[in-house]
Image (cartoon, rainbow, N blue to C red):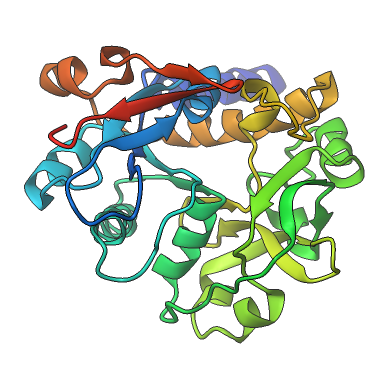
Amino acid sequence: MRPFFSVLVALVLVQAALALNLRPVIGILAKPASDDPTPQTSVISASYVKWLEAGGARILVIPYDATHDRLDSIFSQINGIFFTGGGLSLDVGTTYWETANYLFQKAIQATNNGDYFPLFGTCMGFQLLNILASTNHSILSFGFDSYNLPLPLEFTPETATSRMLGKATTPADVLTTLSTKPVTINWHHYGITPDDFYNDRVLPGFYRVLATNADTQGRRFISMVEGRKYPVYGLQWHAERNQYEWGTGEKLDHSVEAVRAVEWVVNYFVQDCRQSGHQLGADLEKTLLIYNFAPTYSDGSLTYSFPASL
């Protein structure tokens, strides 16, 4: 019986691996270059692209001002969405917010219907994911002294049951690095306090809080969340910068331990996206795949810029 059982387990694992999409495509929602309401260029920092590519994904640009019909077409051909950081108004009614909300609702509905679809947000993207899940669009607080601030994560008890950082699945050295070394870099003045999060009518039931931190003045903020039911993940910090940002004055840890820790995060997210069966068509591959664009260099970093008519 034991040899038969071993063969059966092996067959199950092989079938599970074969079911994965080994050509995942992740859409990054481009952000307008400023809050100017007139037509403008949009941008994506290349470090986000490189980080996701390092996890084994191809990257597709999602125009922030795309029509719903176009967004529907894009959504049906990608396997996950990434919301970037960057200073931008997240007020209800802005074009960027409306597009992000439309995509968020589509992802939740898709997963409810058995069409597994992950989402990930960093810094502003983290804040955005909390706003979109909450009924309180004033959940953000201003005035955090957390700019260019590297910190170790302060894990919560919920981390033990996390899909991404559960002790049963995450290498011990990754958890040790994240929790004991200042490898997570923060670049934010806005944030979500634990009190505001837990007092919200929706957020505690939608997300589990994996980590919190305090700014230089001791003011606490939520630094990492994970959807309880849905594959939605958010970091207030920047996991892409340790490997791909080299600006002067940035307090980034480029050590092998830091790189291994942030690689774990992206490898997890891309593997999650491999569970989506959506397939990229030739038209989007020729028009919106990131290979169709070239980044420009400035002060240690690369940035993709896109025309308003993208």
